[in-house]
Image (cartoon, rainbow, N blue to C red; front, side):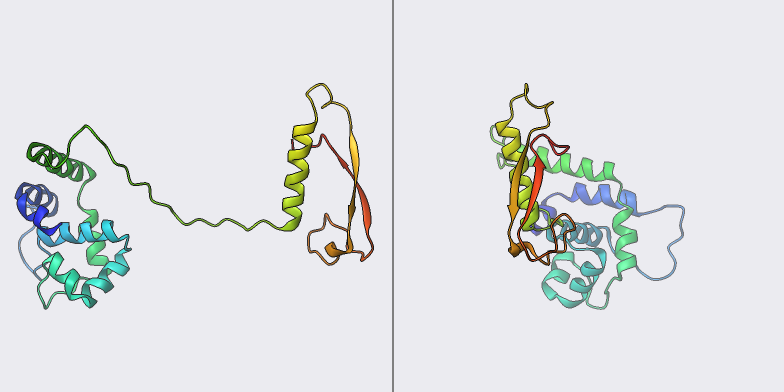
Length: 192
């Protein structure tokens, strides 16, 4: 990736146009170069780091510092990285992608004949099913499969026996007694 960024200096010019404000006088501490900001952005996107994680890894890893072309004495903070990376406009990144894509197509590295898409799995909070949920889902599916549309309006019911295994279950739908209980469940209920 480093060689690709080195081959296209016009991308750095696009990024530098967003980062450098001509109305501000050049005083104070020397900040990050446009190349370092672009490379930090690439690191953040490729590795999925937050700004805090990126700051830690840039201060901790020599490999990441070398890729980002950071001087040995400069260790950017989270707020510095966030402010500089977020100052790059989405339109600038779109133009950089167009430059990169156009040049790679002219070189024959990529073509429009085939397209490969990477779909990344994202972690989400999914509650594991409980036994009562599985039973309820089973009853719902069975009732949906066995009842024809002509019989749906009727109030068909069947009996289910709940064994003592369910005793002490925190779900209020189930009986708390240790003896088996018979419950009448409607086949055509509100869960359809």
